[in-house]
Image (cartoon, rainbow, N blue to C red; front, side):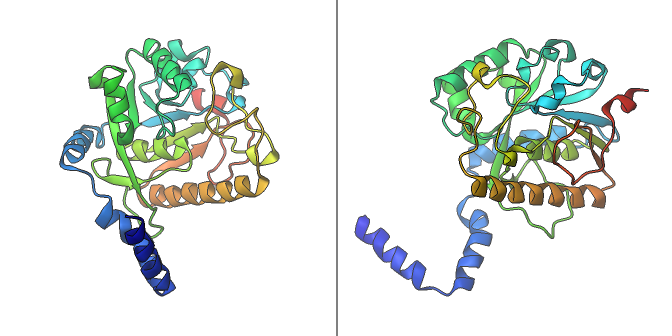
Length: 280
């Protein structure tokens, strides 16, 4: 097997650079197709198509700014929470309609299991969106009510020329950050106004912060709140901004408005709006 891999590598690195570009662009189409079972699971997402056509929603992320804002008006709104959002003191009062979690890097991590259990206990009426790669783990550990869990297949590169809303019954692009996941889902659901909260995205300043203390729940990408490499963090930010700008173009092409209602932060892709002004 090692000899075969060695020969394949020799052939691969002998090819012109243009061939590599074509391979990277189209590999997900030809080599990473969903299985028949996965396709069957993805078809269930059709029930979400335009389910909230013409409505507005709020995507509540985990930046520290949401500690400065009164989120209780969201009790009467369609909301998405993400990651460890269930730790917010108003979570049980708001009762978010949707909860999004990015693909897990370490499904055997005990902290992650504890997080899922706590999330399950506090989210009886919430619909969850997981990566389809997490499905086996959720089943094996009997986590969450099966009719409340929905799966997304992440395995594509974003096509900057695309103008259509991504179809949740098919493969969609991998995400740099969970708000990107939420935006794609919200647009598929037909929301015409989308408001972002807690999306500071300013960790390039040297610290990764949340509305809660990191000691409450371990985060995979953070060690003692410190960013290990400024170069890697800036590179990550460029990729994240490109994804936001890509989705902004799709939104504009489909008459969808996205606003940043975060108090402060670095994200400058979307027009700013005062959160409090939305409830006058």
